[in-house]
Image 1 (cartoon, rainbow, N blue to C red):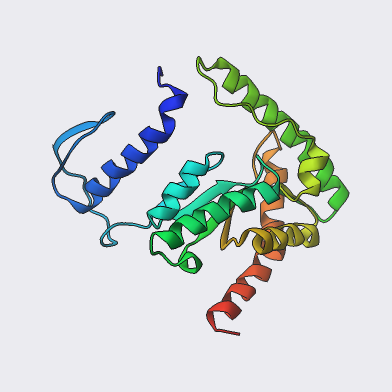
Image 2 (cartoon, rainbow, N blue to C red):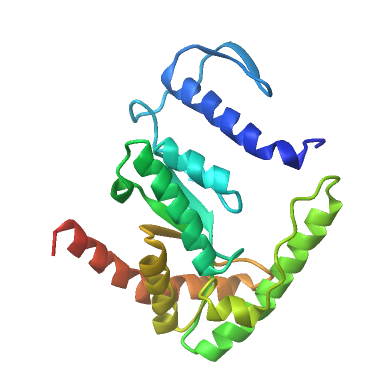
Length: 232
């Protein structure tokens, strides 16, 4: 599309300015570096006031983590790219920036993305999941190589390293719950978002994985969340 990767962060920040104005002003105008709008109204207007919750997406830039913390937005990131200890450092930058700007870090929500494959047989889950992750990585690499200005390369990592570090969620229900519990405790997560259909996993297998995860893994965290809300 002829859009430079190097401009992506600035475009994202300006896009958020446009969205916030569109949600709160009827009509609104915006004259920025990348976007120009005059007397535009967005309908229907959002139900939430002053605007819907904002989740900022940050993955590899310390500046992005700090920016979203300073502005008091919730945070969405990706656990796959870096060792969990490195992601914990990024999240601490986010929380420190939030605190310095007068926001309560404990009130901010943080989520990360997991590729999930859950079966009753943990060895089978890891075998199928490994094949899917390898295909997934190859597809991303091919797509990145087609760009005229590709993003920085991802550090080489074996599937075994990624699995051992808990950066994918694969195994039986107990395995998957343990991986998410570790991520919650090390990273201070309040949410996770999960992908079940990736890397060529057949749809029926992905659907079975999703249903097993929903029935056997999710309720463990729902009961914990209820206890926290109740002050137990």
